[in-house]
Image 1 (cartoon, helix red, strand yellow):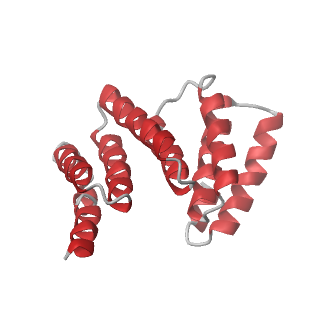
Image 2 (image 1 turned 120 degrees about the vertical axis):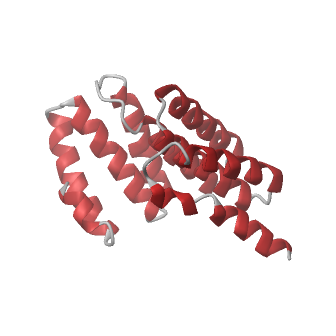
Length: 168
């Protein structure tokens, strides 16, 4: 939790997560180590350090097979998709986004489904794929209607608004 305290300061967040990760990697408790790896990967992604982000998210992927906790699996696959999107590897990005959507659907989590559709909608927007963006935004809206996370209701409009702003 200490790493989350520094969300506005990603370098401090990474330092805290890294210290805990290094300790846990030597004395593995797979659930905790997997969570730390995912947090490190997402923190590096926020700083656009893509190689480090991919390394830790792939560590999460390996560790999660030994972990007994499966919350956030879809979210972490969306994060890997975002890394590949920023690396300009659209085929891998879409593959991970689709994996995230599938996992969210299987788990029945409208929250993670919303997050996965938002990731692919933003990717579609950046790629100027209007039809894909609209479809993803509509799926996102459907997911939002099944969740108590009402703060997510604005997410679908962001990529769609951006695409139409570019066009007009």
